[in-house]
Amino acid sequence: MLHIQQMSKIYEGKVPYRALTDIHLTVDEGEFVAVMGPSGSGKTTLLNTIATIDEPTTGDIFIDGDNPYQYNKNKLAKFRRQSLGFVFQDFNLLHTLTVEENIVLPLTLDYVNVKEMEKRVKSIAKMLGIEHILSKRTYEISGGQAQRVAIARAMIHQPKLVLADEPTGNLDSKASKDVMQLLSMMNEEQNTTLLLVTHEAQAAMYADRVIFIRDGKLYSEIYQEGDRQVFFQKIIDTLSAIGGNAYDI
Image 1 (cartoon, helix red, strand yellow):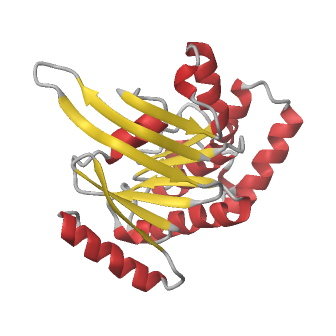
Image 2 (cartoon, one colour):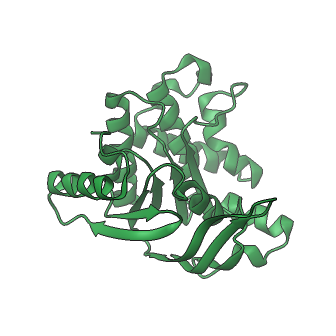
Image 3 (cartoon, one colour):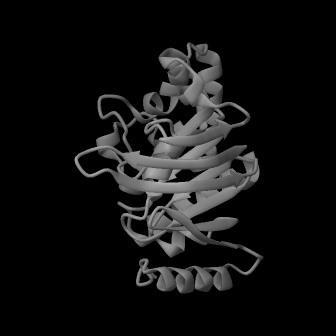
């Protein structure tokens, strides 16, 4: 699904800064992968290059066989809108719209007919337990509910790849657990390919695999082998070894 070859990112300036160096990464279809590392290690830069927000300096990125950086501006915007789903830390919902209008926004931009929109929003709202708030404005709902809405919006157009950037960063522990369980459920039931950037071990332990980045380079990776608590401890141990947030327990 996602294949990165020899990718590096250098930010130009008076003193050029190398954010990523020679990244090789493959994420299979239906896989749930978390990316972790200390602050400034390159996690967000990696996510941004995959999201086509930040162009790599060298190397190639392929998503389901397509290299989006070879597209013109209009085709790239269409690819990003149709093939990628985004879940952000600050939700990025439009306060002038209702919950339902926020969720169907990706479909509206692609001129999907109203009946199909209604069918999809009803299905995904039921799955995420937000049917009762569809008519509310986003300022009338809780943070946990807002993140569920953001997940619904990211999933409703059935993207090839969902990118989640610190989706639990603004939530309390209960809401964080609920959101990660929902993402895990969507991954398992919808076979959604999911790439999560997080500094929280509790969030990362829901993944099939955790990749660790240090100083812009891939440091190591560990796999979930059935026992989530054992996996959690391995994450903590690895973060401690590379100077990450081992205290985020």
